[in-house]
Length: 222
Image (tube, rainbow, N blue to C red; front, side):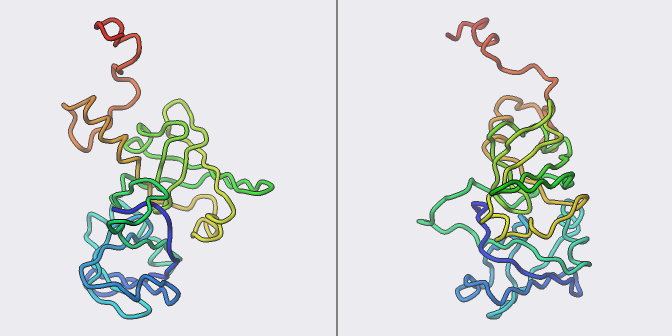
C-alpha cells in the first residue's frame, strides 16, 4: 500500500530475464531497503530482489508490462517516480494507492499558470468510470485531485502545484506521453458493492441504473 507521495526519481533499464534495474543514488529510503520490500515504480508495486545503496532490481511479469508504460519508458531510460511502501505509523498525506495500474492514459495538454500547472489526460474506460470531481487519482504513482472532467470521465484535468511538478517526472512529460493510471481504491470498492454481479475487469460505466436520491426515495429511504 502506498500514498502517492513521491520520494525520489530514478532511472530504469531493462535487464535479462524480465528484470528491471532502477538507479536512484539520491533516494534516502534505499539505506533501509530489504529484499522482499515493495516499491512503487511509476505507480506499479514491484518487489525488491537485489539492492545496494544506489539501485535496486525487480522482476516484471508480462501482465505488468502489458498493463503499464514500463516498456516504453525503460527503452528510453526515462525517469520514474519512486515511493517505498507505507509503514505502520506513517502519515497518509495523499490517498490509498495499491500500486495496481488500471490502465494507461495519455497526456493531451499542458498549461502553465502563474503558480501551478494544469495537465489534461485521456483515460481508458476502466479508469474513466471512477473519475469524479475533486476525487483522487494516481498518475504515474502521484496522488492528484481531479479538477474537471467530461461527461463520462474519459477526459480529465488535474491542477499540479509547483512542488509536486518539480519533485516528480511530470515536469519531463510531453503531450502524447503514456501515463499509468490507478483509480481511487475506495471508489472501486463502492462500485463493486453497487454492482456485485460485475466481473473484476468490467466497468459499470455511466449508462447503468445508478443509486440516486430519487431511487432511494422511491424505495422508502428518506
